[in-house]
Length: 588
Image (cartoon, rainbow, N blue to C red; front, side, top):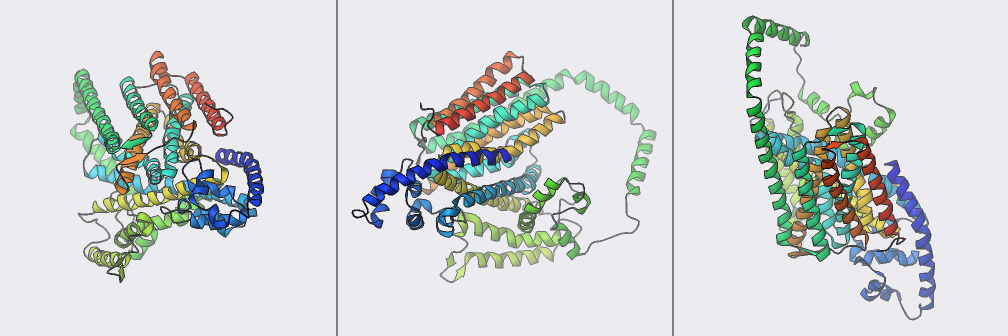
């Protein structure tokens, strides 16, 4: 993240002088024509079209004098954010003085950092556990759960960010830049870092399968960008391609397990005979006795039962005092930042944990979730539009939601106990899944709105913001987790997570995002590339996949440190080329 801040600061410094010079030239032209053009004509569609190049009318605000920017953003529809809760153009140009613009940009960067922290917190602590509980309830195999529910949990920030970006034509470049940028980042930086930490030999068939499917998705997206639009059938095709990928994973796992069973049948039979000798009656009695003594050692001397209030207070406490003292100071600072948000999430999102004996059943808190969970749904969906809707012009929807929630909460509270979860406890995982998904969607919408504003102020395209800030923010958590897996001796698992996650993000991010856009507007979504940068981005991603598809098999599927260095150098060259293309130093 410090590197991201440094890049953004340098970019801002470089573009600030350029924007200032443009403004001075425009001011001279404006003063010379002030008698022929009034203020209203400056905001007319014809005048906006003269300065706009990307289809986003809000881009013209930086070409106006500082005194006219506030009125411009008030009267320009593209400057109004109908997805997020904060109108960032109005805050920037109406609430703050023009001289404080550098301070506002710095505050937005810090706000982005906080939003990415919140996004990762919701996905890891609330969204993924509920998805895991749902997959356990449905009794899915590990392979199916890994490429469906768990892939959705790991890729939720990327998918929801893409869906939020596709909701407006002027921010679709953010989605393309983020999905392609995250793909390049993961296949080069993350994969290269894994190779540097722990050289290993990849599993040949799963590796080739993942690379081929991802290359197909990238080529499909490249074709759609070349045409400039996507139809309903093509959007559904993304989801169909992912279903084929899931089927391929299941079939390959079945074939592999069957072959392994046939080859190791003799070894398994001898192992069973040896196990029968060890697990004789006397051995089992000794073993069970030692385990019983071990369990009794940690049992409390006196029975202790927590009251309902104590259960509630312990459940909403986000800080574990036993581990707080061992944390590094940086971890304590991040925890302090996340505590208010974590407390809000604990009060609104139920979590079912199948690894715990009581499945994380907290009776008073779960009863509160029946009220707060649906309330969050109606107040966050479409920025609270439906929650504030008046039924027959008198009763808001959110009031009716609270009344129903109170009735159901009281019913659950008086028919259950603190010690044992009810038989329908799995329904709380469904509620937690929906509520956490809407929280993620809300935060992702705010991130897209901030990045769009930064692009307007800094004269940067949505594509470059997507492939840098948005892609880095969504991928940095996966990067650290995969490197940690490699250090612990699981590099194959780490590299499989790399490709499996970006395949899901690409297919569901583009497919689901465009489908939602079609349902709201028409059956064709226009995807116009923003200059040459989009082609540089798609070409670099395709080239990195071709390198992996050719070079890894040539090395007998052994990924060495030399290949890891090569991938890192490739990403640095791509990033430099992308920035030079953005600033029009390199033109294609």
